Image 1 (cartoon, rainbow, N blue to C red):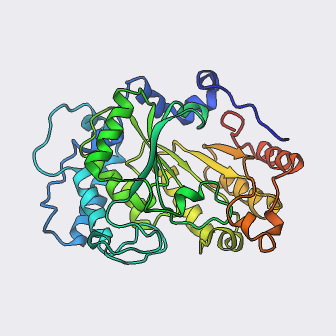
Image 2 (image 1 turned 90 degrees about the horizontal axis):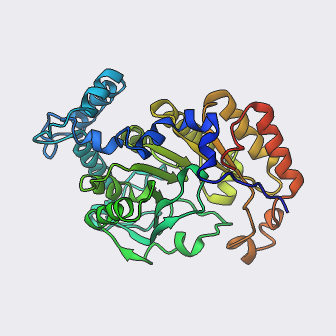
Length: 365
């Protein structure tokens, strides 16, 4: 059985690449830096957001976003203790997400249903969805633990091998949530449980509620996006400068495999676009790549090669945890080619290829 011994949460920070790639995240952990959402509460929007047309809101959002790229401006805002009156940059993001929800295109399925009125699209989630569980999680990548995980029900994918299908396929299960409850849970995880981050698991369909909850969150704790990353471009524009650390999936190296196993059209172009956006915006990323049996050449190698050429300064968790589950077991003839675990030879082929490309994987895999 293939198994990588992952460094523990303390020794991982001895690795120089981890320190560099996750430098701002580490500074937040040690209270030398401020979580981005807290900074964005201090940036005035200088606009009456409720009644303005959407184009004007986007123009204002883009203008503020350009200013944030100015390091001097960002540092001045961060160190400013004066609380603004009126609407903030965070408020502007919340309003834009609210407008998106009226014709929902948070993800690239773009169902265009009005979720504020209870209409449901592919994800089958209304205005605010449900939470399956909230707890400290010690099974995440070493720099993240203990992670304050908030598991949402429902999903924008339909992976035939989903190991959490009891959560992803039943959006009606769990506890109904709203931004006020979500903020209280996040504050408790950070303040009382001493979580190192607030880890939103399967957050995409819940983006509006998550960002809305930040308006009421108070703790200086890193906000972590743990997602299949099938975000629309509008969603990416809103969240790309907001989250402190990213934990996106990158499963497939081509559109055919993505469509067959996860019903995810146009996967490759969307994944490469979205990963490049967050890399250029903040860059503190741990990519999760699940090695699929029989998919080393068509998926693993193209993904690693793209990472090495386009976003080389990230951490990559090469995961050997795939096992047959869900529809793969129920419809064995249809998915016979992935009805097994990856072999040790396949795992070695992927990790060796990653090493040859200079991918930084050992510290988090």
